[in-house]
Image (cartoon, rainbow, N blue to C red):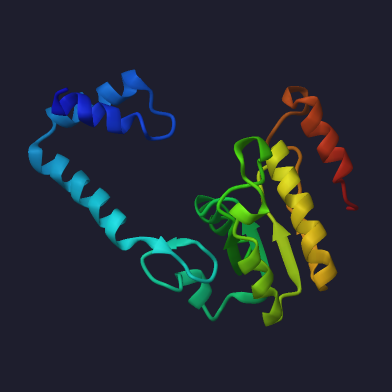
Length: 194
C-alpha cells in the first residue's frame, strides 16, 4: 500500500469523509506547495499534543481549567449541559448565555452500549454543591438526546436544582408552510405568552 493510500485511508476515519472525498483531499494536498501541507500537519500535531479535556467541565482546551471555568465574569449559578465540546461554541456565539458549561461526552444510546456510566454525569452532580440553581439541558432534539434529557431531569431534580430544556420550534425567518409537522407540534407545545 502506498503513502497516498495510507493518507486517504486516514482521511476516511474522519466523520463525513468517504473514500472518494478522502482521495480528493489527498490529491489536493499533493498539488499545494509542500510548506502548506506541512503547516496543516503541524497544526494537527499541535492540537493532538496541546488540547486536553478541562478537569471541571470536560470542554476541550489548551488550558486546564478551561477559559469558561476560569472566567470570573460568568454566572456560576447556571450550567448548560451539552453533548459534545463543539456544542459550546454555537451556544456561546449567541451571546445569550453567560453561565458555565458541562460536556457529557455523548448521549444515552443503549443500542450503542452508552449508558449513564459512560457519560460525564457524576462530575456534573458533584458540581451542584457550588451554588448552582439551574441546569439547562442542551442535548440534541433526537431520540437519544431526549432520553438523556429525561434521565438528567430524573437525577438532578431531587438534588434541589431547577432543570430546564432548550426550547424547540420554528427557526427565525422560517415559513410555516415549509416546516414539518413535528417542528410545528413542538413549537405549539412550547408556546409562551406575549
